[in-house]
Length: 300
View 1: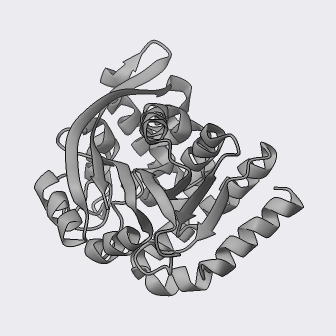
View 2: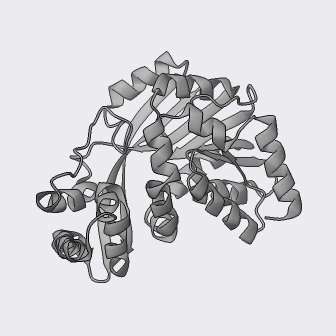
């Protein structure tokens, strides 16, 4: 990041009263610990793999922004910055792309990527549930799998609604159910017999499949003041190199976290078992799967 970009980023943080300390205090402690600890660091390590794998959804969001000719864009749960940087490139200097996340490790990488490509994208370390946004400061909000982790969904979406201009719009992508996304649970299912402490997924808790129930999500958005809500199924084929599969399954998700504490012998055995469970998804030198998601749009 250039000196002027760093100054702009610092000013943005000051104007909108963001800070790592505030984010840590205001976010549910488990989510803050996860995304500023092992979970966030795992995503940093796998950034290139994940960005390539989720590219179809970046393209979908770019199309949505272009259709509205949005100029002030907030990327909610921006992570390592891929979608924020994509929006900045789309704007070509004729607007502002801001990414927001609670994970400082992920934002550190996002800022480094912005500096590397001399991007004007800026990033805020804060919690969307309680952050003091500039009222009506954005004309569009987007998210690629960054909104399923709030401890208080109504508080988060109410706060975000206040930060949107009256004629603004929301477009976000979230996963449908685990049953519709078997690829996402292959690793933990295969490893479960060898890791009795593997935590069971709670569909009602913050997490990957928290918005699987479309009507529940619709109710949250309505209660939070959003209108013209549309939730439609979107299915995209995602791929990653077969050579990257072991890194993917050992770094991300519940299994990735559990393997960090396993001894080398046990770890090697589990990896072999889990790796074999992915065979149905391997096609030549690529891993291919269907990502069953929701495309959620709403207006102020």
